[in-house]
Amino acid sequence: MQIDIGNALASEASPGISREALDRLDERVARAHERIERGRRDDEFGYAALNLPETTDPDEITETVAPVNDAAYVLVVGIGGSALGAATIAEALGDSRLLTLDNVDPDHVSEVLSLLPLSETAVTVVSRSGTTAETLANFLVVREAFTEAGVDWTERVVTITGDAGPLRELADRHDLPALAVPDGVPGRFSALSAVGLAPAAIRGHDIGAILDGGVRAAELSPSLFETPAYAYGAVAYALDMRGAAINAMMPYAESLESFAEWFAQLWAESLGKDGLGQLPTRALGATDQHSQLQRYRAGPGNTLVTLVRPRERPDLRVPETDHDDLAYLGDTGLGELLDAEFAATEASLAEAGRPSVRIELDWVDEAGIGELLYTMEVACVLAGELYGIETFTQPAVEWGKRAARGLIGDGNDESDSVAEKTRLVVE
Ligand SMILES: O=P(O)(O)OC[C@H]1O[C@H](O)[C@H](O)[C@@H](O)[C@@H]1O
View 1 (cartoon, rainbow, N blue to C red):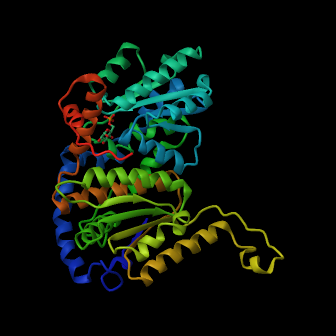
View 2 (cartoon, protein in one colour):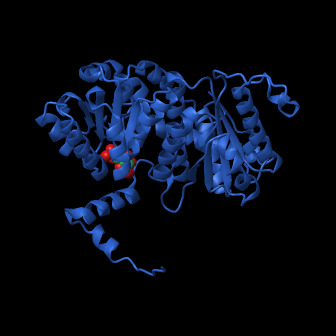
View 3 (cartoon, rainbow, N blue to C red):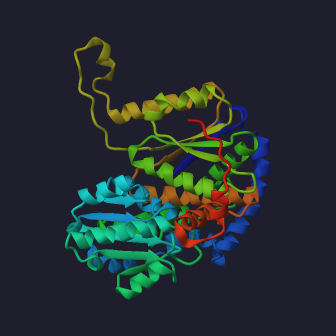
């Protein structure tokens, strides 16, 4: 994988970072690297996630899911870090039979359940805490749908959860196949554990190759000039400090659309603290080139655009045509056109002096997605060290979680604050 930060230099863009400032920042990266390596060595909370490519045992996952690996469809019931990794991996591998229920929209849940052949469907119910209301409510609905369809849900469900909590008790009571969310690994950093990999394993994907991709990026040198993940994390941080409060993640591949969603959780929950942190936004090339690019290029200069693409992809020829005006399209490929769109967006931003970073992976395949996810996790941890914030907590999100539970009846304090909201209604 390659990360090109040239278009984020002050000589090219504003905000941008000068070569001298980058050299000075590299000294801070070296110190942050020591902290990260110590955390990995001691398996400290959060840092332990960066050991997953080596510590996750793909055989244990494959064996545990064996009772349901005849399933034609997999339904992941989870939310946030307990769903986005699996969804990202499924999409990257072009697997449309791996679906995710990560919202409690009744219309959507009903539709998914009515479309799925439940007797051919395996369910992974995933919650690190085992207490997340959305996940447990959806699971109860799914379970009932299986029963109503005459399918024994206990034969179709795998649980992935922590050591204790309601989901663990349920797994024990019904003797369900169970995998653990590894100790010290926050949900949004768990894609390369059973959380992200078990659903793919049920569908028969080579999860060992996904982990190998992570291993490829796990050798970290103490300099941003030698470690792509550090280059990205350091430049994103430096540009934020210089005014790029928004980071628009824009992959040029439909198969990476969910990756942008995964990245948004990683970046926002990890770095949005103490009044700091870039706002990650999601875009898709070339589609958003025809909408959001206007704002990136000509709106306030507060956005770093992160352009991601595979260097190679299968192409689809555009047929030759005898229409003179369309002749230039004939005998090209859609992939060739997409690459031209990518280069045009990059050039358009550079021409206007707006910063971008280019991330290129070889292919969007098992190893490619493993490497990309791992690289972004390291980038995020590095950025957290540079900001000096607690990367691995999410107190603001937890507040909302407790308040939502309180509002539907578990009687906790935050729900009182919700009830007292000031109203100024216009109808
Ligand atoms: O895995 P769970 O405990 O169910 O949590 C699911 C999600 O819940 C919250 O929104 C947290 O802030 C996320 O980081 C977490 O991924």
